[in-house]
Image 1 (tube, rainbow, N blue to C red):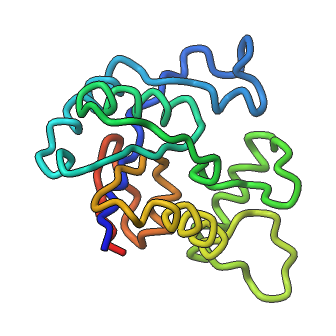
Image 2 (image 1 turned 180 degrees about the horizontal axis):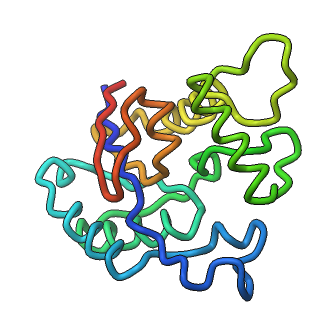
Amino acid sequence: MTTFYFIRHGKTDFTEANSKIYRGQGFNMLTLSAEGIRQIVETAKTPELKSAKLIVTSPFGRALHSAAILSEKLQLDIQVETDLHEWQANIQTFDYLSDEEAEKNYEALTMYHGVHPQNENCIWESADQMKQRVYAVLEKYKQYSAVIVVCHGTLMQYVLDIPHPGNGEIAKLVL
């Protein structure tokens, strides 16, 4: 059995959002704010995390920054897994949607509790689609006794069936 410690990234620094290279998909390159760094430093002090053998992380900047802090504090290697990315508002083409379109799809995700309504062509990623991609990643690391998974709040909420976690919050899954 493997214990997976899911950790939501720290608070993101949005000061340069939608400027420079942080437009469109570049938005996902944003890293942590000073508060986000403090959150993850505190999370790293959690005694249970000392049992982990590896950190696997989303490729998004805020998660990578969080994983780097955890790696330094816990002396663990990092493995980047692209399928640990955040929920997708457009799973069909992965095109970047306007804030309004993405928000509309997020509202649908919430309203329908992660399930595509019958007879509707939904482009947003369902809870089952998130679970499939995340569980495929976890399968690769089941030879370890404990693994830290640095990822995103909406992903954790729907994959682990928990309330939306706060920044730096830990949720455990044993497989």
